[in-house]
Amino acid sequence: MSALLSVTDAHVAYGKVEAVRSVGLDVGENQIVTIVGANGAGKTTLLSAIMGILPLKGRVAFAGQDLARLDIEDRVAMGLGLVPEHRELFVTMNVEDNLELGAFRIERSKAKASMEQVYTLFPRLKERRKQLAGTLSGGEQQMLAMGRALMGAPKLLMLDEPSLGLAPIIVADIFRIITELRASGVSVLLVEQNAQAALKIADQAYVMELGEFVLSGKASDIAANEAVAASYLGFQHEGGSVI
Amino acid sequence: MNTTIMLFLLQDGITNGAIYALLGLALVLVFAVTRVILIPQGEFVTYGALTYASLASGQMPGTAKLALAMGIVAFAFDLFVARKALHGRLIVRSVLTNIVLPAIVLAVTLYFAGQKPPVAVCIALSLLIVAMIGLFLYRIAFQPLAHTSVLVLLIASVGVHLALQGLGLLFFGAEGQRGPAVLSGAFTAGSLRFTGQSLTVYGITIAFIVGLWLFFGLTLYGKALRATAVNRLGARLAGIRTTLSGQIAFLLASVIGALSGIMIVPITTLYYDSGFLIGLKGFVAAIIGGLVSYPLTAVAALFVGIVEAFSSFYASNYKEVIVFMLLIPVLLLRSLAAPAVEEEKD
Image (cartoon, rainbow over all chains, first blue to last red; front, side, top):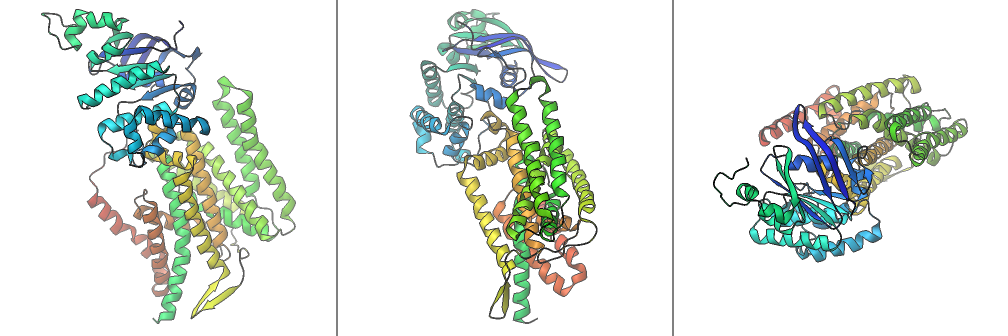
């Protein structure tokens, strides 16, 4: 199976500080791939660079096309979506307007159908559709951010810490929806601190430390790895820390 | 002062205030979307007014040629940016908007220039010419700087203002001009006399405000503009080009400016540099609105117009001083009310 997203030898730097070094990554179709790692490992930086928000040295190909010269907006139009950690919603506009704008690059007739799909996925958003985005709860804002990204009919959705700061019941809901997305043909690249939950639903996983991937493989194998378990999954083995 | 004079001043103030309101709204719009403090807004006013007046008096306005010249520069910019990935559709679109469109408008202007065309033709041509200048101005001066700080954009804005003012002197000369009234005739209600022109000003201002409100509230492009103003990164992630939003904002600002000019020039004689002061009064209103609030800006603009009318009656020498002094208490109050803001770093 050819990869939908393929990153080879990527470097991302903030001035002279390299935050991501020589990273390679593949996301196939209908796959959930997760990147786990501690705070500051460079996960968010990597996603931002794949989206085109930060400059990246190396090669990023999406659906067989090199992304080097494409702006964020072109990448969106190609079917690459990002839900950033801070969600970046239009807080003074209502839920429906936020969603409608998510389909800015999509035909109007298709946008209507997408909105219905998003409302089926997140019934809560339908109830609040006239409410201003800034007045929603954290969980609802996360749903709206995901909904807005889905309105653009992405082939690959990148999610940056979707569970951060949310109540456990909402986190479970969001992880359930991520698996539903895979079933409906959307690939997901998931960056999570909640490694346990992420590894449970993912097909492939990468472990990131200080800007580099130190481990990669099937999510189930990674979850079974003792060193990973010690560092990220909350089980303490003696001397098992990799950090 | 008797009631008649007071009513007369009030009427005068509201007429001017309506125009300041339009200009103030344009300033808020452009700032919210592009972070540019649009000092050349006043030049859009003069260019619109004097292009209209020149056409109506049978002269050829130099602005039509300027539009074509700027279009050619904009086209060169487009080519340069796309040099590594040139493709046909992009070039055709760029040629059509940047060269063919202003060339057609120039040809039409040349055709009509000698023969004192009807008022409607003069208005349409003036609006078209200034709209194109606004659009190309964004492409040439501001789009390449879009990622820089507010300060850099402000400096560019001052530069553009000076350049356009100089070109205005070149095109229209140092003499002032007046244009024909859009709507002639007048009627009297009680002691107040309403001219067709002042009614035009009210009508167009109200229509424009309602139109903008509908545009921002109901249309996808209007919402996209608001979205860019609220959250630039969010808008880009939704696929909305910052460039597109900037173009729409500048297009609206230049049309609003030109229209204001066309409405004023039958009432007052305008010179190549008159626009600056008119634009600044719109700016006072926009500042009172905090550069974010449209309704507050509109109300403040009416207030500025009325203060100006009364101060020109009581102390005409200090008219401008009094109007601009309005800023001091506003800034003082705002600085006391708002917490200290750190220097913007994006």
